[in-house]
Image (tube, rainbow, N blue to C red; front, side, top):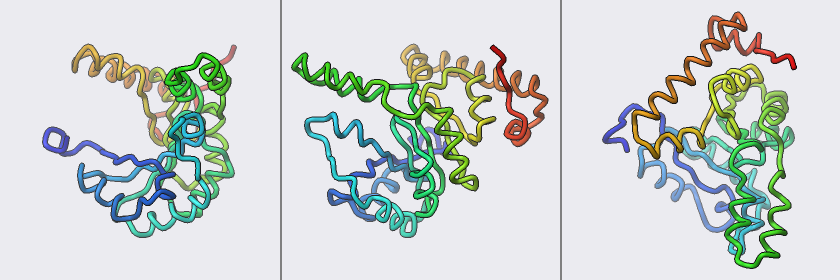
Length: 230
């Protein structure tokens, strides 16, 4: 990827739970160097692991091990969820551990509970796992509580964001960056140009929201977020 996009912001991504299954600083560093990553993302996915027949369930003591990586790695460490949101208590612990940023990855986007449910073969097991389809903290609530717990940390908002107006709302709630998956992947299935048009449209929507909110820049949008009246 670096050969075609030398300046793109690129993150390596590993499961935090693997720190309890033999992963050490050396393996994390190898993942970073392999792709020339600017940061390492550690994802927290307890629900997904719990619903996997082959899942790794030992999440004990991870905060201390994350703190070790924060001290030993030469790049920033970012922690994210995978669709269930980061709680206020978790955000506070991660801030103390020394993470550089948090991606709240809240409820509202891809449900890995549903993904894992439909990997099951027996109908009764599918039904049991589907009960957790709506488990988690919605992205907006996770943003507010995480920003309250760790106001100094950069926050990434992902999980159910569909367009530029959603990005504006997320920034108003405390996000510094926003992430999109479903819409971009759908456009990418049709080619490069649809992705360019989609993202240009998102940028236009963000600028319109900022204009209507009286925000000349992102910092001002933080201070004066757009509000919908229903």
